[in-house]
Image 1 (tube, rainbow, N blue to C red):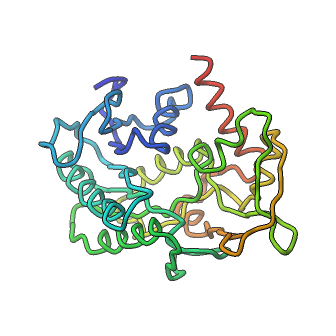
Image 2 (image 1 turned 60 degrees about the horizontal axis):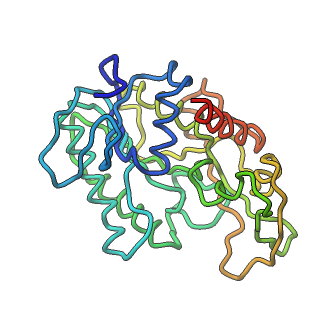
Length: 286
């Protein structure tokens, strides 16, 4: 396998997706020195392992954790049901490589709108994607594996892989954001890419039986999208929020903090933007 000098501790699926590409850049760059070795799997050439579900199982390294971050984000209900099938494939990979835990990537989209949403908040997704991830979580909860722990990560917006980020790159155009009745813009929970990598590594180091069935993943406090734009040096063009616009989706990270009490994450828009921009600058310098 490429870029593997040690036996990998993690097998990461979905390396060709937006989040997967970010994580692979971190693991293979200067910041990867402090992370456990990982092998990245993708359907497309260029990753350590090229494989598509449905094909014969590839030669896999023995590893302790499968990070199942592959998924489908849009399409018909039938297409979105792929998320549940991929969760089962993640389980199959874990069995094949002897992993003791699988971290399944779910999404904050399972909740719908709201603030300080905790893992005990009943899911109420508004989108087909959120509903598909909720269904995936239900399927994972029904897995009956004595030797493998399964944890669904309800991940906040990942800076660098979300819909806002392309508008934060240098250009002459301002970022267009909705302004709501209280005069404010969208408020979201985010996770910086470097923090996401460190959270994954820390969860992979926990005893499998310490992992909860579901876990919110976010960096620090919620941030305004206007604050992210400002931290990136981008001007904002405001528009009146349409009726269907959602002002706030914010996650409680109390369970994450109790599970990983020593892990510090970035707490401000400026710090999150700096983390993402440092990753972009490191790529440009290669």
